[in-house]
Image (tube, rainbow, N blue to C red; front, side, top):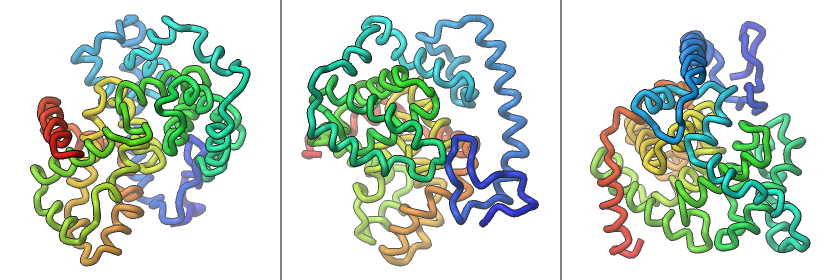
Length: 330
């Protein structure tokens, strides 16, 4: 739906992304009427919390509750750095990023791969052209720091969104390092071993929670790798609406990899009826590729995050399924 004279919202969101042709301004207006009040309350609570100078290295039940309800935009970058441990890592090696930028000879193949992907990174963001040189620096520095990973497609979206949020190369580098090495290790390595393992785990979680959906997907012969690889590789960046991704990332930096499974499961469960209505593989693929990632369910980031945490999911269940997946060769 196009923005109209009666819509109070621009066709570009607060992060600089152009809204799609099918964007539902009417629904978004209703959602924001309530969400803006939530954001105001959350900001006041966070201001009071920050005045107490809490130790963000320890995620107390109160802090976890605050994070799950959303970190206000102005505080997001610094809070992510602290709750993830990236800030501590940076303090232990304060010159790392700048020393990587000063390497005399960069690997040409890596640099060329990154350069090819820069124009493909957020082309629908009106401000991002001005950030691409900084994105190149972040990706090139990380590729030369972690040579086991080097550069992998998908990292451009993660690093690009980190840069949009932090507006700081060095913070983006350290947060990227934390994601790739601590939250989703070996998702971006050459064999993507842990990505394949976790897609198998995700399938088993779907079987256990929404078996009818799994049967339908498998009857249509649509592989989970086709459906969800990008969800896991990009941690939903360049998949879901930006505000929804940032709410997910708030929780990822505080609670780790389990949040990625929560978000993926919530995608299936909240769209159960839509998935079951698809009567052929083309309709199902379109549902996952287009409809599910931009509909009103995922646009309402607050309700979507609540749906994520209404699921029962224990870390030991995921770890047990990971062991089984490895034994099965995934």
